[in-house]
Image (cartoon, rainbow over all chains, first blue to last red):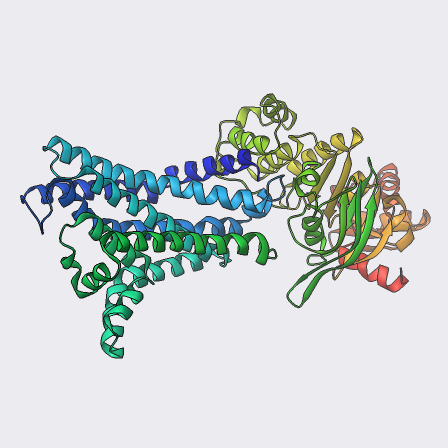
Length: 279
Length: 299
């Protein structure tokens, strides 16, 4: 793999994202809402045991859960399908560049702008906390930002997998939005419904939660921030008692990594090996 | 330079290219002809290594599957419809120039070569169809490749832009470069090709030299002349006397069916006899006619 070609694609993809008005709108909204969250969080001295950086990070978790998966899934889902649909992928492949280089370049090139917008949101809110006195553990705040970046990577990988298997951008966007609804909106309801309907045990409920990368992010972030893991409910208590607080965190971190690497690896193989017919 | 041996390409149950074979020597120009869906574009995409296929394709001895990058570096490609990222003209050339590892001054050279210098700061979406095709040609020329591969390059151009573009290809060919192109126009084949290869339903059905193609297949062209009604009968008589017996009135003037080589003679004779021709149109044989004739003759 030629790194120079990969970097060319990275630059092209990142440049296109930055020029994309939807992406700009997303970045501005995320940053403004992060500042709003900071403002609301600072109006109360303590929320559920959090204060300063911890309080702001805890408030940002829901914002991340709403915004980051949507932009990551949709960006990933259109990255290959749109180029396939309009023919630029085929034209690009007539030049001395391989599918592997294009794939890796696209992943990195679309991930960097998403990471930039996450960093901007967390950065602005973080500066706000620091100006206001900077109470709390800044490392926990950074951990939450890092987990948000990992969540973006995992959902971008899933989006890319959708993209590799879609001939049309409209179809891939539809699937991406459906997955977002499934992971974010229906995720909790699904777990609750399945638990009630099938009478699942606590360990099965925990295992079920691991099937949703957004749920894994949520639990990992709360565990990273909270001195009181009981706020996660019986499932959290079970997990911490079984694996230990650090053990659960690393387990969840590992699962988020798997949620990134498995779809990404499969999408890579599908794009470069299994689906040579689909240009 | 290019060797295609038993190349087959299937999309599900559809065989787009069926055991195609041909070779193209350095400095030679080959036209792929056929109706839409004959497999020309698919075969070109196989030669470029864009599509997977069974069989063997080599460019300058390099197997396109085994030496993907090296083989692709040898060829410049002009697609049927130019497709670019939404960048400035100059940036598009810079992007593909970087992939092809050409020096940055080469961008200026090709901009001048195709006459796009004054449009270098325009976004590709602001360029006209002719300019986009010239940009596509400029990209293909960036690395000064030994082989130029063009897929119906003039199909989306108007007459003026088409003429300009064909001249650019002709200049490139005259430098001794190898050209492989697909077309459904015989006049382009006459102008550019040393050899022509006809495809139908993915198969190569005929190969010949353009200069004797029409003669070999007995193909006729149709000349439509607009002349005043009072001169039609006299014109038909003059043509009959000169051996052009397939001339008839069409309401606005007359139609003459003749060999392609005699098109100028027809016009010359009528003008010498002072027949007032106000307009004329020449209809080349359609690709369907040619394929039918190939089948009839059992080539």
